[in-house]
Length: 621
Image (cartoon, rainbow, N blue to C red; front, side, top):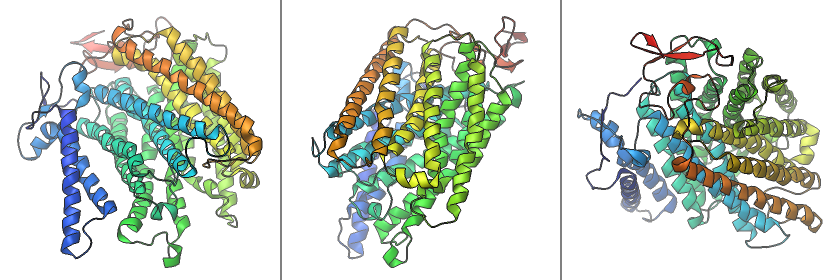
């Protein structure tokens, strides 16, 4: 569904004469000051002290978000239509197109990708600071309070990357191309889903200026209801980010269901599209619950509520139930798109059809369904006397069955295949290896007696990272190396790509495998100090972590340098058959120079096998 807005040939400017990205900052800042002033005025009128930092921050930020989005170009592109005036599309040439409210799904996908690569690198830098502190027992460079703030910020930033990067970047860029659509179903909502993120990210990165927050990325009350003002930065960013996820999910689902090309039956839909669909359904149905949970904490803090104050009749454990009711499905919002990217890549570089296509789809569906009935396994030690624990243990272990179907499809595809070990394939194979370790070690945590021993130890840290980083982030890099030629029309440098892979793969495993040993030997997570007998293991982990961090320098240089100087990419450098590979690299404005028509399977690689063709004026291209 293409937009009908009139394109602009030059960079649009607003009434202030500022470029749109800078105008967004100015409008957002002014709205923030205005909202803070409104709070001060109201408090003065009712006889309260005028200054209340939490209330001023809340109203100021909530007013700054729409103001910054309008300043980024939403007013010209969307808002003018609300008052009956003609809208214009933000579509300047070159790099300027990425700094405004652009409606092109391909531009939005790149905006997501670059934004969350930056967030990922910053989160990794915070992790390096944590590992410096943990290299020796006792105080090294920061005290326990600052370490806890680092840990909280690192965890939340990494969760945002894992939840958002693959769906945001490649769900936007690749998925509409793969289904043969000209754009997303709702282009303006699509741009809105991205532009909700910059205010949230800026707020999070500013949180250390006020001392951050010290309750971890989960932010359990009562601590999160009573600690410093930095906790409000977390709450507001979480709510705005959650709204972005809901808006994006509606768009993904509608695009897949309603905008598939002629001939693209459900049995011909690429597996990556299925993974985006299931992740969007999870995000749509479950994100509201976590928004309720963090909003309740905000009400306790801002207005003296007592949702989680046991002395006033509240129930602290209620937050955990609501939080994990979302946050375990969120694990699969993080992982399913990466597993879909893995399954998309394996057939191409094995030159074999995807093994057990419908079994793989069923596995993704089964994981999605069961993910909503396992949340209390995060709370076995909280609900120690509950008879419901056994049911959650069995449902958790049952989720290994559909997960096994996904692995069956992956292993069956590469079995006796003609493996072409290009960088996308290396990262896809690493997903299989890492996620296997994450799955096996998760079985121990699903068993109630074992979980009592391992809860809140570094075993949990290692398991979580093997699941989210080992599958989710490795899958992100697999997708980057696979679709980069289509996104930018350039090939990444293969030597630098392989250096990055081997350093990242080795560095990741030598960093996190020893953490299982540390956890078994009693090292607690989220704490800056530990017993002196664990110093050897922690020094090794810190050095390995620094090696892992260095690997991303090769990726960043390769990514930026190749954007301008890389070898020009052909239409289909990997010999893939799905629809995004039958259009130019990068694709034209409306994706295809004609109407795409699907005529066969996406995973047959014979010389005469065709998935889709482009029909132009009665002819096929």
